[in-house]
Every structure is written in C-alpha cells, then in structure tokens.
Length: 158
Image (cartoon, rainbow, N blue to C red):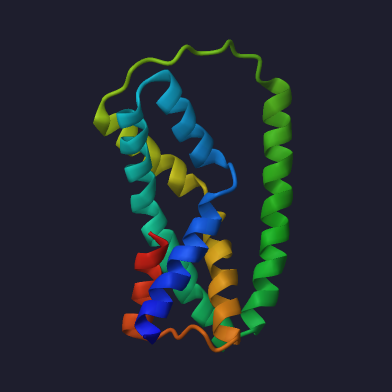
C-alpha cells in the first residue's frame, strides 16, 4: 500500500505542477493551434524526457538538503545573486531587442522533439518545486528516499 501511495503522491504533485500555465504549456498550446495536435504531442514528449531528469534531481537533492541543512543557506545566497543577474540581463535585452516578428514554419518531428527538450531543460523551476514537495512529504513522514519508493514517486510525477 505504501508503494502505491508514493506513486499517487508523485502523480498528484506532477499534476499540480502542470496545471498552471507556463512556458512549456503555452508553447505546446501555440504549436497545437498553429501546426497540429500531433506536433504538440511530439513537443510535449520531448519536454517530458527532461522532466524525468528534473524530478530525479529534485527528489534526491531534497534528500541532500534534508541531511545537510547548512547547504540551504549557501544556496539561498547563490540563488539571489543569480536571479538579480538574470533580471538585469533580460531587462537590458528586452530594451535593446527591436527585431521583427518571425513567422512560424512547419517543423519536423525531430525538431519539435528537440525543441521540447531544449525548452524543458531551460525551465529549471520544476527542480525546486519537486524539492519542496518531496521535503514537505518527507517531513510529514509520508515519503521515504529509499530505492523503490522514490522511483515510484518519480514515475508517478512523469
């Protein structure tokens, strides 16, 4: 029963993570409207490949943080510096970018799949999301980091 519970927790957390509109959801919707539903599914499959790795990193990084809370303070300082630098970079880039709008063209399945992989890899926000939820569940005694349980959580999130 506890193994099924880990899978259900992974599924629920993955479902909650997918509901809000974000970069990947809106890109898949745009591809579906401008090209076809099949093209959007190919894009989503490419994105899902990277999500597996992100959930895996998130869950096992959560274990590291639960074992060593001093690392969290260092990460917070690093994250603040990175977010400030990215904010400045994108603000300057937006002010200087006056390029004309590019018209979309039909893409092959390989290009759509790799576009899904690339955009999903650039979207690193699922990692802290899964770190937070797995830490929350572990703190309540509902999640264990052992081999079959953590992998069922990851499979459910996929």
